[in-house]
Amino acid sequence: LAKTTQPISMDSYEGQEVNITCSHNNIATNDYITWYQQFPSQGPRFIIQGYKTKVTNEVASLFIPADRKSSTLSLPRVSLSDTAVYYCLVLNNTDKLIFGTGTRLQVFP
Amino acid sequence: GAVVSQHPSWVICKSGTSVKIECRSLDFQATTMFWYRQFPKQSLMLMATSNEGSKATYEQGVEKDKFLINHASLTLSTLTVTSAHPEDSSFYICSAKTSGRSYNEQFFGPGTRLTVL
Image 1: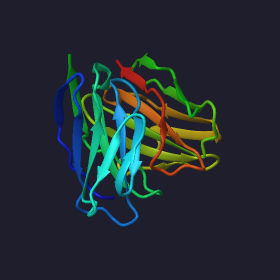
Image 2: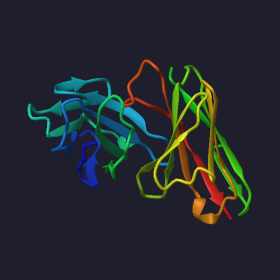
Image 3: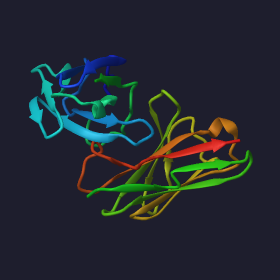
Image 4: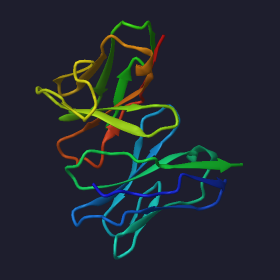
């Protein structure tokens, strides 16, 4: 499993765009980049997954450069309810989910 | 769709007793279920993987005789913490995967907070 590095915490204000970068220098050819969101005292929730370039859904966008050694989760116009821990995982379709420390995002009014 | 429930949502027990936690996939069949543990301010730690009808596979360092996992049907897995002690107090979370989905996309339950006195 590729090791990932992401900031421990980030602060933002409501209405701003938040970009959380994840480094994964040892990503393998078969690996996908997956992001989960976890609110306090709840189970994680799948947000988005991508392999290369850009993926967008109703929640977020995921930007992956050509070398795939990093990725950026972009949350447009965050609100207070986006305060959570965001986990970046890099794995192939048969790997177990191994969670790192994640990024604790705090959104202020 | 793809809802996973856990019961109970919280439990307090005395040291030495056993506690059973249920994990159910409500609207899909879960070929594989996973159990995680999370201590305060820490990340999730995978404890074991269970496939319906077969023995669970435990991660290194997890005592299989202490954390009994049963996956009797495609919609139910149970975790029994036997002879619980205060150090077992934690947030236990299950997740489920369907046969048509990759391991990357799992559906998590809301978690069960266990407090051992």
